Amino acid sequence: MASGFDEAVWELVRRVPAGRATTYGQVAEAYYGVRKGARGIGQALARCSDGVPWWRVVQADGAMKAAPGGDEQRARLHEEGVELTLDGRVDWDLAGPWSPAQREPRGGAVRPPG
DNA sequence: ATCCTGACGCTAT
DNA sequence: AATAGCGCCAGGA
Image (cartoon, rainbow, N blue to C red; front, side):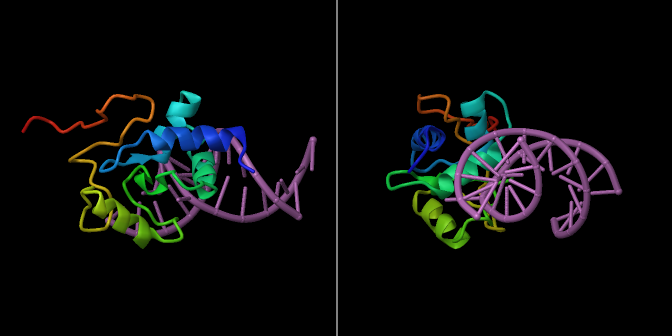
């Protein structure tokens, strides 16, 4: 049975649109208000149910190795059009981590103007 | 209540 | 760039 914590985390993760990715830390910040407890977020995602785009959550450096199928995660992200680096990590340079805290279609797209 | 584990993050080396 | 150490949080035994 999913605890309130789990459901809250899943809700935040559902706010991440296809084609974008975020980090455990971002979700943690959206939940606690501060950048801590990212580990707990991972735990909740490990228990996620259908309808939760868990693959859109990666590590702060864009890497993803802890997932049982890091390959699976990369494949899904690539399918959605998320840019990946040559080392198989999410490229935050093109589109920064999405902020689950905000509902509007914008995120940390901190892409400097040229 | 205590100890151990784990889809994490940051700093120091 | 890669590794090690420490801190954080949640869950299970």
